[in-house]
Amino acid sequence: MVRPGGRSARVQASVHAAVRELEAEVGRDALTVPMVAQRAGVTPSTIYRRWGDLQELLSDVAVERLRPETPPEDHGDLASDLTAWAEQFLDEMASPSGRAYVRDALLGDPDGGNAGQCSAYAADQVQVILARALDRGEGAPDVETVMDGVVAPLMYRILFRPSGLDAAYARRLVTELLNSSGGGQ
Image (tube, rainbow, N blue to C red; front, top):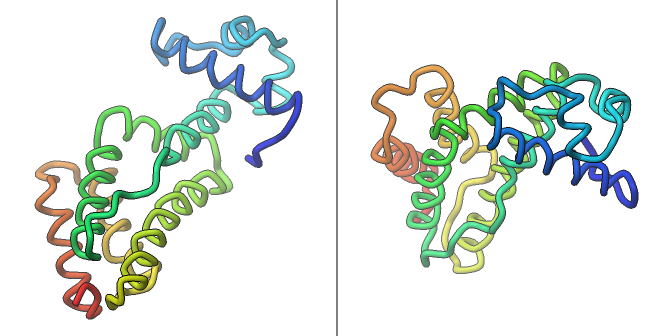
């Protein structure tokens, strides 16, 4: 969903805040549109008109929660930067709340726009890392190669085969990617 301005932005912000507060107070399963509307100071029809239903609202909130708040840390070289980022990505996405946000983002958006937005967040973070490497004169793969070689397998394992998933797996993916692409040399 495009970030609106003016009154629409204020409504979105108050509704998102109401969802977050109520989730903490009563739990996700107890949420209702009228409850969120009352807390946000809007009518239920405002929520239905804008989001359609509770699942679409939860999806919108989840996408915002999955947005990175800061650029990836600079550790001085591509291998260190990408490894640290992959470990953090795995840690955040594999957490119970991370998995819940991913599920919500996907469930409330059958056309795939939210999945694309979440993918774009990861790609933007990877692009920052790769640009730093290139600025330092390092060889680096392209964004899609990193998405296919690191992010995609991590997300698959997080969603479908989480047992035994750990930081060593993320490090191995990065090492294999950099060895096969010639990046990080």
